[in-house]
Image (cartoon, rainbow, N blue to C red; front, side, top):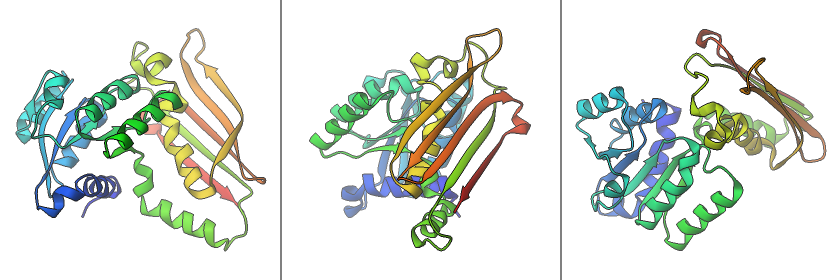
Length: 268
C-alpha cells in the first residue's frame, strides 16, 4: 500500500500524464538533482505503476549514482541533454531552491511537465513567471507540498469546515529539527541559496494552515542567530487568519536527529 507521499505523487503523475494515459503510454520521468530527498523520491518513483524513470542529471553523490545503477536509471551529466530528450515527458526537480526557477523555466520551455520540490521559487516574482510560462504552454507545474496528501490533514480540514468545535481561535506549530547533517558551509544556511528557513522549510506548514483556515497575513516575524556565528538557526512568526485566528509558527534547527519532533495545536 502506498504511503501518503507516494499517493500524492501518484495523483500528480496521473494529472501530468492524463493525455498519455488515454493511449496507455507510461509517464516517462527525468530527474534533476538527486541529493538526500531526491534520492528518497527516486526510490518511490520506481515503485509507482505507469512511471518510467528514464534518466537523471545534476547529481554527483556516490549514493545517488549507486541507486541509479541499481534501478537501471541512466545518469545524464548535462541538464540540457536531459531536457532535449524526446523520451522524457515530466521533469522532477530536487535541487537547492535557488536553482528551481532557472531549471523549471528551462524544462517548461523544452515542453516538459514539471514537479518542483518546495519551495516553488525564491520569491513571488519568480513563481509568477514560472506559472505564466506553464499556462502559456498548457503544461503542468506543481510544487510538491506533500502534506496536502496526508489523510489526517484532510480530516482536520473537514472538522474545521463543519465547525463542530466552533470557529478556530488560535493555533501553533513548533518544529524542533536536527542540524546533524547541516555543517556551517551547507547551502541550507545561505539565504541566497535556500531563501532562509521560512522559505526552504516553513512553506510546508504555512501551506498546511492555509488549507485549513484560508489566506493569512504575517503580523510579526523574528530570527534567532546561533551565538558566535551568522547562522540563522531559529525563526518564528505570527500569522492572522481571518479576523479572529492567530497562529504562531516556530522552527529551530539546533539539535540531534533523535530529538526531531513537531507539535501542532488548534484551539476552537
